[in-house]
Image 1 (cartoon, rainbow, N blue to C red):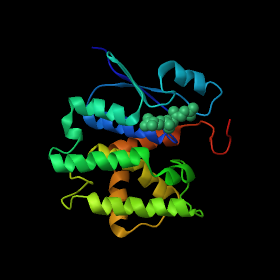
Image 2: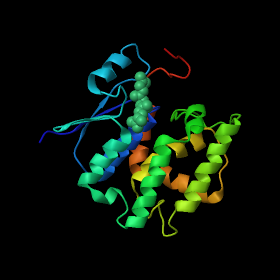
Image 3: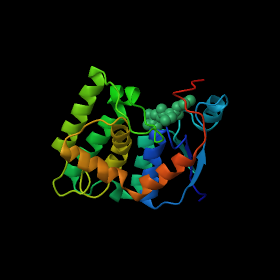
Length: 213
Ligand SMILES: N[C@@H](CCC(=O)N[C@@H](CS)C(=O)NCC(=O)O)C(=O)O
């Protein structure tokens, strides 16, 4: 079996790539990573050549291509089931919370894009974004297992899905309840996240929000 290849976007901006990459790291599975710079004149053709969905992350395995972050995480969990909580009720909650993040919180995602190079600074939030911030904190409060330390006990795919949100709350200096802030601090102290972030800060690609193509 050849090494799976994970195609990712810029570490600084590609929140979907971060999720899949962090889960593959936690899985302990061997993989190779290939970075495709976003917001480049060649980006579209480069991504289309490796991803039927036209997006990164995309994972190439001997069995074919998986081109969605959650599908890549599920591929990893097929081999390393501990990426989801072992107890069925927790696992069901973890999958539900993960799907909520994968499919929702659009205002927060659009209005506060992940930018690991941004100096934390507050900005005016619109109503929809403020609602997303409140809803996410309520979701965490409702689903979290008190045992901790992560949302569902041990670190799981759900925590990978919320890590980019934690970076947004920090980058845009968004006030959180103390419980939510403590959870974000834990996510941002994760060693794999810190390694991704260090790589992001070394990147020298144009900022797509300042120089859109
Ligand atoms: N639902 C997809 C979303 C992936 C996505 O939107 N990726 C962005 C980068 S973060 C992308 O590839 N954009 C294409 C482009 O910038 O041309 C997933 O979960 O993987």
